[in-house]
Length: 167
Image 1: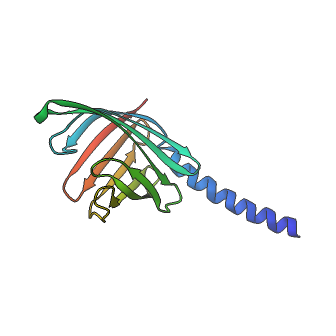
Image 2: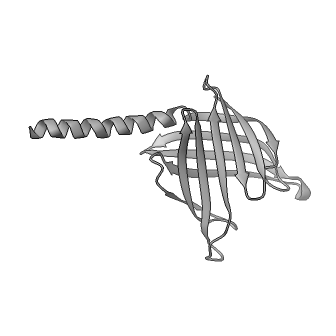
Image 3: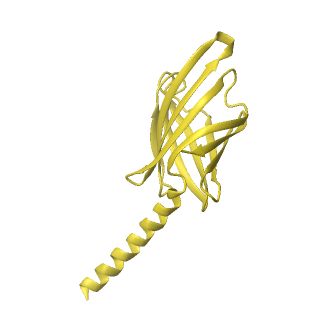
């Protein structure tokens, strides 16, 4: 009888884990920026962006490689940022270095089979040690054929869209 109860509990947890895992599968892989609409940041131009999305230990892990330029000072930039979001939807802490960096609390919400929302809120900066009322939300939508990803970026100051193709 104990073995039967254990087996039932194990199957329940395995089913829940597989269901959560399959929600993320449509977003996994390498995505290359094809075009943008709107302004991502004031004064900067994005020339290329590659997203490498994987599931590592129950976290949707996103490595974002961005190259661009700041025309006003004629300077190029290249950045790589890694962020992780718990597939379960629980909060995740990410650290972002630099002037506007700090401790970021991040959340992942699945909004449907091919849609998710990523929410980030900066809790503390390295320099100021204070809460900043800044955060961003990204809405990710994968096409039904799984070849196109559209990301809508929203902050309290702007909104833009980026279109990616799967490599």
